[in-house]
Amino acid sequence: MTFAPLADLSLAIHLHLWPALLALVVGPVALYRRRRDSLHKVAGYTWVAAMALVAAGSFWLEAAVLPLGFGFGPIHALSLVVLYGLARGVLAARSGDIAAHEGWMRGLYWQALIIAGMFTLLPGRTLNTLFFPGQPSAGLVAIGVIAGGLALRWWAGRRTARAFAAR
Image (cartoon, rainbow, N blue to C red; front, side, top):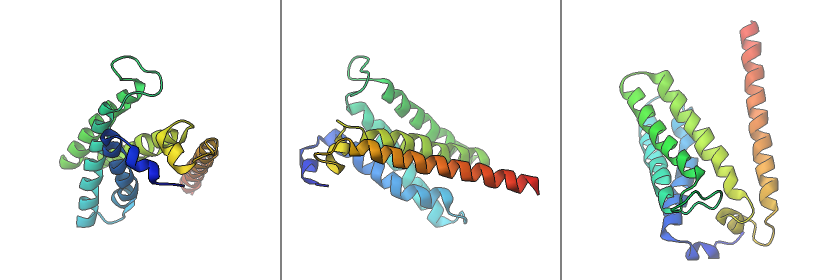
């Protein structure tokens, strides 16, 4: 892995990449911390701000896959969903609907950050070039490993829920 190509990236990519990495790291603190205290709030506000920057920053990036015109593509619809979901999640917390707040925020973390983020490892994409110089197909292996891990997590969660319900 080499970080030299980072210097050649556009400002728009930097404004998209770094908040995404921050959201990736801060997200579990905000989403899975048992106690809902000041650390949860600070991590949560940081995560929401980072995700808003990721989504808003994407509008300055040209669609690499299925461009529809004017540089926009289907991926930009995801950015609109993220901005909508962030607003719904924050409003749910402020109104005391913690179940809805948790649902929106966890859904955004897994679907908009983790799953959509896996596609940045496809050959030809910027992160693939950074992480796997000279071996672009290694990105496909990484996607397979991540997807397999997510599938195992989902399966184990369903199995645990069924065992708990059977008691």
